[in-house]
Image 1: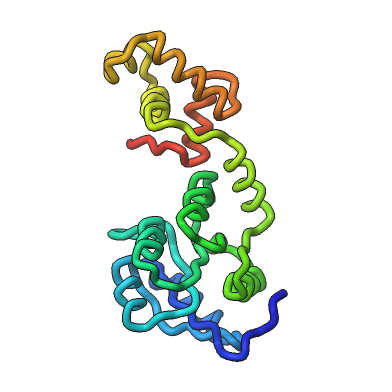
Image 2 (image 1 turned 90 degrees about the vertical axis):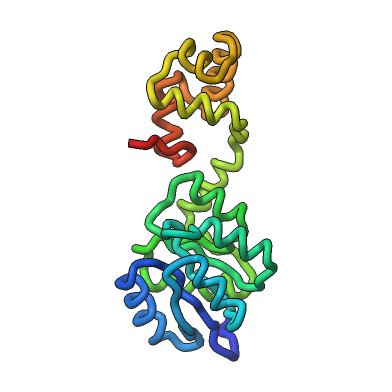
Length: 213
């Protein structure tokens, strides 16, 4: 485990749930070498606070109204605000993990992680390393091994999930049935599944697509 720094690690908690913020603040406030300097209920507020009061590390939720955690990560990179980020979320689909790490997060934890894991993650990421629980690291590695779906394949996949036939998909996208069939075959191969039904189910479970109710 990295050595404890000589000055406190300054942390900003970014989460729109007051109970979560209060719990984290209380837990981290008792830890030597860690200082919670404040909290923000969304990405916009966090960015504004960081411009006037830089911190070492963000504990950042993914799902928030307004600027989401993912958008906040991208904005941090765009504006070159120098702070390290641990995603702290209730969600762990393959795509959530992959997109967060691609966008610049250095750690990924679930909100029900034990206190020991939280402290280890904070100290590890502050020391310049990545922190991923073993099962999260495994899922990230598996996701990175799969080829990315194209924008057109994502469109086709969304329509498959809604139960559309190849003919209906072709009509909606103004492409031939053969082209649709080629896209479906490519999707099945990239997702390493056996058929179109499993492709749709797998895509929803992994967070690749979101089906609106």
